[in-house]
Image (cartoon, rainbow, N blue to C red):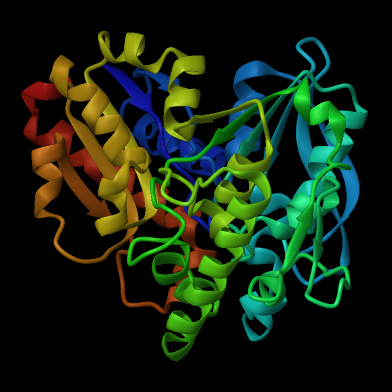
Amino acid sequence: MKIIISPDSFKGSMTTMDAADQIEAGIRAVYPQAETWKIPMADGGEGTVDTLLALVGGEKIKHHVHDPCGRPITASYCWSEKSKTAIIETAAASGLTLVPESERVPERLTTYGTGQLIKHALDQGAAKIILGLGGSATVDGGAGCLQALGVKFFDGDNKELQGSGQMLATVERIEFADIDPRLHQVDFVIASDVKNPLLGDQGAVYVFGPQKGLQPSNLDEYENKMRSFADQVKQSTGRDERHQAGAGAAGGLGFGLMSFLPKLQVMSGFELIANLSHLEELMKQADLIITGEGKFDSQSYQGKVPVGISRMAMPYQVPVVVFTGKIEGNASNAQMEGIRMVIPIVDQAMTLDQAMVQGKPLLFRSVKRFFETIRLTKESFVG
């Protein structure tokens, strides 16, 4: 039996590597001789650095930066000296998990720390920077990150503003002559599976704002602020990237980088990792693919890891099984995407906090039960 193990992270509970290890342990508890290929995945968000570190090698570099609230923290990124490549997660310095729920007020939060990591990678001599967009706490249009890289924002009184969500509607002038010149030489890749534009009902504010602390009553006002910021960026740069797929990623950080970085490539985070791991070639040999994520819902169909894997596997008719912490909404469409089963891992009544803490044993037991059922029923699709 040849099984590909390729989960995303279960955010807040397990890293992608943790999930892969638990799935493998569950399989081996029933089929100790199974041939398994562990390919931990990520979509550009949490877990991207560890996943790529496992694939391409290198080391973790630590650097003192500011968190979304402006507090000093230590964040890390992956560095490959051989290829002069830095792999950075937005979540490392600007992540939602860094901000207590009581402080999740996007007007006050900034991506400045992410810009500090990028600048440090440039100081290391980076020839290529891969930035995973995902898991951010921010909705600042990338202003904080850009400020750390040398872009300056001014209000109508010619006072320089601090890059955050609060300044979006007050920007009257943008100067970028002092943007770090090394950004003109480095190959810069945005890795994200978020296709949302900056504005509109599918944009950064309306889709992602509520999960970052924006109240429903404030969404329209915040959308107008973001539109005002986009207008100022267009006026200053002559570029209008607000409609581009992925501009709304990480609270508009995608938009900010698209607008000011000259050598920028946008890639699917899933596609990037799949290519590096030769995932599709392995699918041609596999009997079964096990994947998973923390919550399987309507967003999963927008190119997140489990559906990305199933779509890739469909031409090879390899069955895909998804383990998830929670199913939200109707999962019946999963079969149309080539997913054979979506299996929740919670096996008894418990609170969300309990489930998050017990994620590893819950996943292990769920996978073990699944393969015990396979052994008993001798399903043909596992050989």
